[in-house]
Image 1: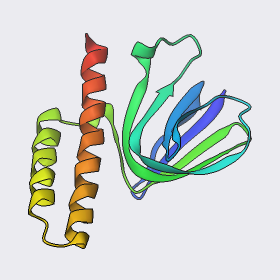
Image 2: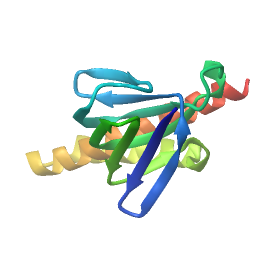
Image 3: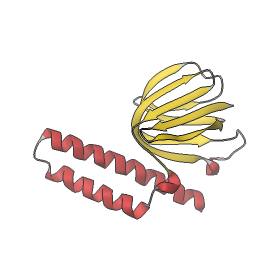
Length: 141
């Protein structure tokens, strides 16, 4: 088994033994299993997926929306340090959609590069939250 820790600025979001963790990196998604080689990498905005047992089907994956951070892998432990992360059941899809729409409006109205970068960061964050909400909805079917 693999100890997975997801730590935000507010504290620990997840800290349990799991079989697999799938993480978003700048080079694409990577899967971490027990006995994975040591690694330090940047996480990018995306979905973190967790499989608790090797026998769990994809429909039992747990999802977290994250805005990027740092990934540390070693000694059968995965630690992901992020500013914030939302577990799938913490995301209200309607609120996330409204926030996404508002962020897109801010991006369109941006008057300078700094405002555009800030708005794009909000767009990216809400897009990931919507992706996790969609995965959760599919799982329920």
